[in-house]
Image 1: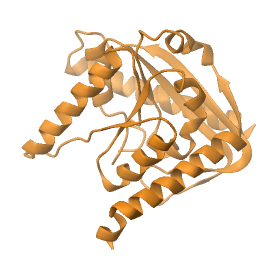
Image 2: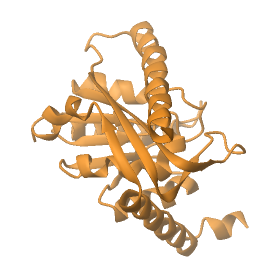
Image 3: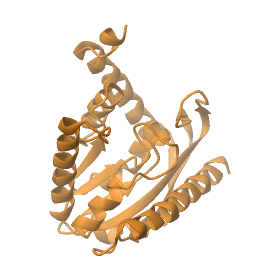
Image 4: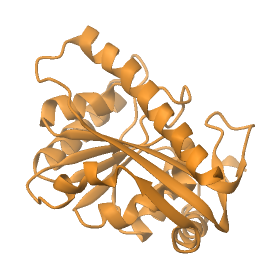
Length: 233
C-alpha cells in the first residue's frame, strides 16, 4: 500500500486534488489581512528577498497569501518525503515551485549533503531577491516549534523574515495528525496576520539562534491565534 501511495500517478492525483482545493479556498473564503503594510516594501522591491513562515498545519489555507507572494519571484521550501511530493505538486500548480530539503538523520552522509545543497540553493535564492515560503515546523514537528534551518537561511542571506498567522472559520481540525491540520469550508471567513520584518544578525551564534527560535515560535503562534480570533469574529 505504501508503494502504491508513493507511485507517481497517485502523487500526481493527490497533488491535483490538493491544488484544486487550495485555489477553491483562496477564491471562495472572504480573506482579511492585518498589518499587511509591514510586508509591502519588500513586495514592491525586486532586489529585496524575504522568508515567509507559517505553521505546517495551515498548508490547506496557505494560498490566502498568494496574491501577495505572486508579486515576487517566490519558491516554497518542501520536504522530499512522499507527503512533500504531492504538496510540492499542488503548490507548483499555483505558481510556487519547490526547493526540496529535509533534515538528515545522524550518520546519513548522503542526506546531509543533500540538505546542505538545498540550504545553499535557498540562501542564494533569497539573497538574490527571491521570496521563500517555509513551514518551519515541518515535515515532522514538533508542532509550532520553528526549526533552526529557516533562521540560518535568514542569517546567511541577510534578508527579512515575515511571520504569517493564517486561520479560517468554519474549519475542521484533524486532531489525529501531529500538526492539527486545519481544513477550511468554502464561503467562510479567513484571516492572515502579518508580523515583521525580523532579522537574524550575521554574527548570531548557536545560543542567539536558539533564543530567536523560542521568541519567533511564540510570536508566530500568537499571530496564528490572533488570525483564529479574527476569522471567528
